Length: 53
Image (tube, rainbow, N blue to C red; front, top):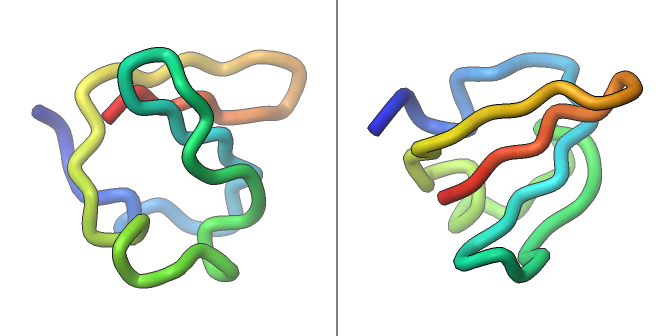
């Protein structure tokens, strides 16, 4: 496990759990339950940060 999503700043995110999209948008706009998740995989694609939790 890596850090918490809330530790990232000013990123446009796509957050997936088991391959299913659970959030898409800016870190600052994410609900607290998303911000408090730990991510286990990170990819960068065309300015988008893709996280697997």
